[in-house]
Amino acid sequence: QVQLVESGGGLVQAGGSLRLSCVASGGIASIDAMGWYRQAPGKQRESVATISSTSSTNYADSVKGRFTISRDSKNTVYLQMNSLKPEDTAVYYCNVRGRSRTTWYRTDDYWGQGTQVTVSS
Image (tube, rainbow, N blue to C red):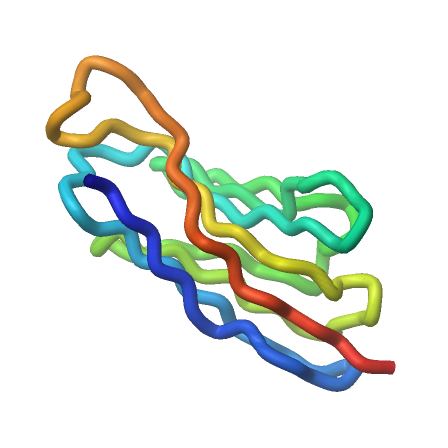
């Protein structure tokens, strides 16, 4: 069973930085894309940043120039968040789109449990 484990959230003052990490384990066979999403109270979940298997990246307009997504060869994706603003406060979720060893014939979306990021003004 594919599992995503996130770390790195916390409380930071406006202008500060945080780095989120997410490791995919438990039988992932291949990964098409990895990404970070966030959901603030009373709002819908939104895409923050994604990175493809060819390392092509996409960012939400609200984080361009401040956040950087990256991945390594060991199924880990990172989100470096700089110049944080109070409006970045949300639960951040890791997403992996790929195939597991048991369901190799289809692509599925896998989600982490979420990590809280709180930016104080």
